[in-house]
Image (cartoon, rainbow, N blue to C red; front, side, top):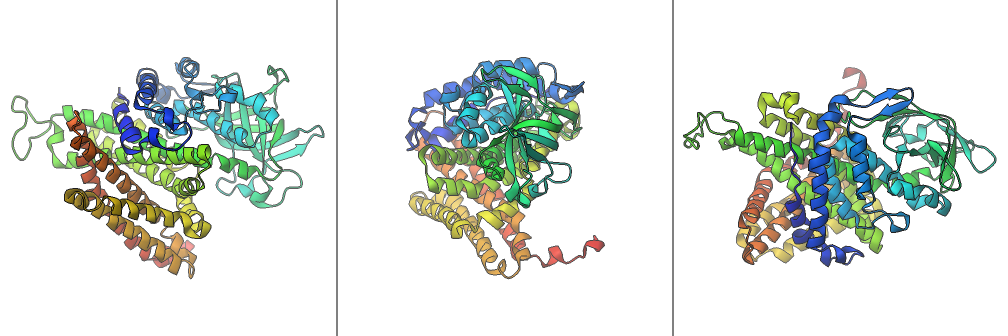
Length: 593
């Protein structure tokens, strides 16, 4: 059975030596000293490794079952859910007014990585509730907040987001679900939604569905979408549960992965719903939580890479096969462990350098969300809006790739269920699809985020990278050559790609959009290059100050050198592909595919 060891030491390094969170001028960050965050992460790690990880293969093998309209979760899930809920983990960053602990989002992100890495399917139940909580918290009335949020924060009640329908996914303007006024301030909601994660299950007393629907007088397209609260059970004025609403789970999807999470077909047959916010403004309410939701999916992607790498490394250290070409390393054994072989090392270094860079990138993104929400920092809001498609798209693409590399490390064993690597591959695959496929993320990045505000955010990013290089150049020739020079070259590739879009995209939009996916990856590599430069600087600083754990910091620098030398140069390849334009992409007629 696969294992999971919480990477709390590396998390603490990122939080306190790279991001320096306790010194940031963000409300609440002054309380996040290393002792406090260490205690939180250690306790979360115990839950992740001791409770959630052992249930991961159980959930995968058993899946969920639908019995007379009731979804049964895998054995042990409910007891674990109670333990997580009773420990207050579902309320970590929620508003204290509704029973939350009020910690910054960056702490929820760190804990979320461990819970997702240990058992992604399980963690989705609380994750979907958190998304629904965010939407109601931002757009619900005071009465709605008072009625629903306390028990959603505690996860006594669950929550969902109902967007997709059988005939439409990304193009939500095509939805057919209707909401007809009942004349008493409520609405009769009718329609079918599909792929609703945690849409029905047996771990909570009630489920608060957020449903996108159209009023009878709605304009065409996305401008005519409204958002409704549709509870599974009606809630009485005193907070007690009333009658069952007119909604049901019509089926469970048979999926490639995340078997432990119930992915439901939800049928609404004149169910009583309550309008959230203004009529026809449902998409705005949904997008309130989009940055957090998409960062959360990016987190899921690399978190699966984290646990896959851990198990691949363990195998490589133990598996005996062949001899080191430079000389036997284990003469007392019939063969050397496979970690001596250069290609296995390459495989493992690709994994390690990605997941550690991804963690820093994701935590940095979370700190920008905190700066935006807690400090009203408009620059941080613009930057995280720009980077969100990169966080989601790049981290999930590379996270899935990392699980495949980890599976490859095990050879034939990786293809068997016994070792667990094939589950990580299957579970990671969905992250590239939901919350907007990665192709859609790249189109959003190039078509909307890049030109937004006249390109102010991307120019701010370039300025930030230039300032970092200028500030740190000339102090350490080795650091310049190994980190700053590669970062400068990669940033220039990113700027050249942006200039190409500006000059050619206006003439022919296909020239820009055909390169959007490469641009997303080019951008992602630059972001990880920036993170590795910052991590290497922090590690060098710690060594210079006489830090006792020299092995940790030296390993960090060596891993960073690998990324800068072997991964970051891919920006040149992406730039070449972008500059080739859209002609070859669009050359074939549809009939000739």
